[in-house]
Image (cartoon, rainbow, N blue to C red; front, side, top):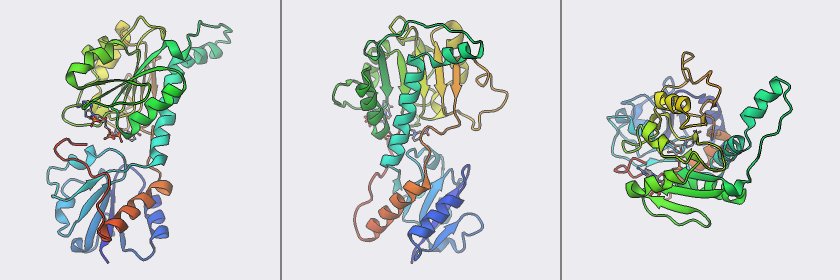
Length: 315
Ligand SMILES: NC(=O)c1ccc[n+]([C@@H]2O[C@H](COP(=O)([O-])OP(=O)(O)OC[C@H]3O[C@@H](n4cnc5c(N)ncnc54)[C@H](OP(=O)(O)O)[C@@H]3O)[C@@H](O)[C@H]2O)c1
């Protein structure tokens, strides 16, 4: 039977291996590097930041499965063989991201960092609180994760808009698209949520000029940035500069160009920055191993793979 290779760095492969073995005891599941065996046995690679050049050394590879929603780590391999690259779309992952976005939009909206500081000083002081219906949230990226988050924010009463590459319609969400739609989207947005994929087109997008276009004089009392997408999209120095000059009132950052975020980064200690360790929507093997195995089974039964990434677009 064609073997499945788990090729993972930066996260613990053990729970994936255990879960896959439990769900498919009949399958030949191998763990890179020590369990690779004969590379010609491998038909499927389940990967997270696999070493560059590894896929090209697997002569009978039939598909690559990213163990997350993003595939930038796969496309970073300059020797990528011509096989389908599949990403994960799963309700578990989507709901985790929705939780994260809702949590951090509400945190900024309800000024939770400020109340936290007040509590440490035993300060009992109430600030004026606008309703969600007065606050404009903008979601960059209206894909699987962006749409789910946008709709949850609509349910909470926020004025929600979304921006994507191609036109989209979503109930109760004002939609913008493409380069021509970007300025209008930013100008009406107070809390910006980034859920774009990392591609050559989105690299370094979250920079000072873009941030300066956000709406600062709205009910939220300033502009906020939440990046739960990829670190490659953001320019850390520009975020710090924007916080300094006031074009940003606060930021939540889950992802960074270099992870873990180096201890020397000034972002760690900035009073207006909230940092999480790239855990906005963790890929949980308890939920997702079955998703990958089901795809492999369907593929072997002659059915088309789902969620195959478009190489030309890069997502
Ligand atoms: N921090 C975490 O824990 C975590 C977890 C999971 C995922 N993520 C990140 O979240 C990203 C989004 O995931 P997803 O499943 O929602 O992806 P998706 O379904 O592929 O959606 C991507 C969205 O971004 C839009 N987009 C792409 N390039 C664009 C551009 N140049 N200009 C404007 N819009 C553009 C797409 O527009 P169209 O609709 O027009 O194609 C689409 O709406 C992933 O790529 C990953 O990097 C992070």
